Image (cartoon, rainbow, N blue to C red; front, side):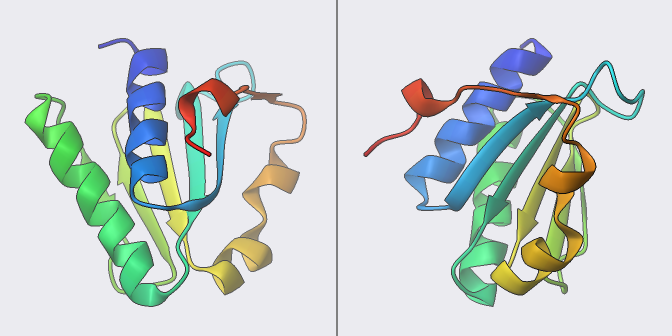
Amino acid sequence: MTPKELTETIVKILDSKKAVDIKAIEVREQTIVADYFVIASGTSSTHTKSLAEDVEYEIRETGVAGRVEGRATGWILLDYGSVLVHVFDKESREYYNLERLWTDANILDISGLLTD
């Protein structure tokens, strides 16, 4: 699975689990840390944890290994090497505002991946 395909799969999983304000950002020109960031929010701490767990489970089922950090916080990071997934609660997302930090990166058009 290519990094872009992994990113799209993660976006679809988050969307199917009712994540809020999903963004996919191509950061390969700005950093060596990853090629893509996926950023999403949960509506509660339980929803945020559930979103991260669902992504972790479904991606593991495809054979892609990853690591998870921050399970007990308002910011859960799933690291798939070339794709980093940031799942926030509302307050943490507003505080860290990753989208502002990466304004020079390419925001992917994921509208075709999302359900209405």
